[in-house]
Image (cartoon, rainbow, N blue to C red; front, side, top):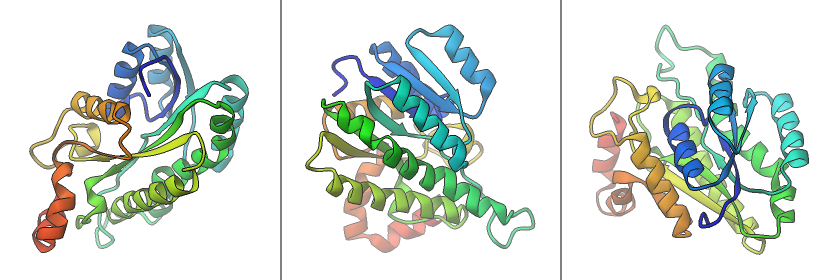
Length: 245
């Protein structure tokens, strides 16, 4: 799919896995539409690279997201791929003094509603493209077994997993492929100070790109490839391990 230049929409493309994906996809000759919140980082990409269009957008805002999709549909009718990469994770538990009630809605909007909204609103553009197109959703190994903290994050990634499967069924007679990339612990700002055995964002991005080229419906990145089998054989052990992930 990525063997010829395409126009790719990438959310959360200014840091972490998103930035690594941006650099590798750009190096392959693709044109990138990058969506993020940090205007300074977006301007840096815009001034440093060719074949890049940037848009500042709060993905938790339906109004801003609808405006964004209208602009993309109008200005980028050749859109081929959507990568729903942006995500946030709040770690306080419901019992912690620093837990914020409003974080429940914000985390759900960014991690789940935004990918669903983008997929729905840009669906006509992808279908009208006629060529093979794709919606790529980034999830996590936590879809198999959640951890103690970040309950909302785990729930949104489980929702992305289910959503990706259902959307794949809905679109199987169209030109749109639905791909899910299931991530391990990656060394990003989100995971700073947590866990061991992290893989680099560059390695994660390369494995995602390899999976896309192999036309995998589900891309298991790093150690997540062991999880489906382990959940069948030793589900209790996996749950104990992932509980403190």
